[in-house]
Every structure is written in structure tokens, then in C-alpha cells.
Length: 75
Image (tube, rainbow, N blue to C red; front, side, top):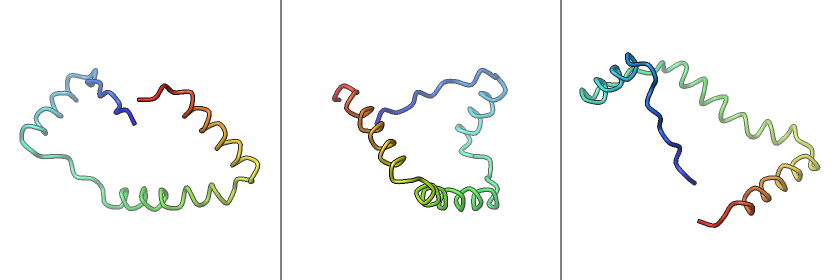
């Protein structure tokens, strides 16, 4: 899978903050409650969506994905 290009931030303040954080090795701490909540939703999401979709709709999604895969030139 191709990597996404990382574009520099248009805001100079954000770019400066990221540069200082990279040079000093410090990163802003993440909120543990938000991390846990995000992980919980991510774990539930795929299974809940699979239960909700009908077999016909799942087949249509799979067909569309297969067409997209075969449309790409081989790497």
C-alpha cells in the first residue's frame, strides 16, 4: 500500500512546535480516557457494521472493492 505524503503544516507556529518537539524528544501526552474510548469504538465498529449489512449489500461492497483492486496497475 502506498504511503501517504506528509505535507508541511501551513501554520508556522505548529511547524515550530513540531520541530522543537522532534528535537527535544518530547511529545504531547495523550489523554488516556480518550485513547480508551477510541479503542473501544474501533473494536466494536467492524463487527457491528457486519451484523447490520445484508448479504446482498456485503456482496456489492466486495464486488466494488475487487473492481478497484483489479483496476490498479500492478506494482
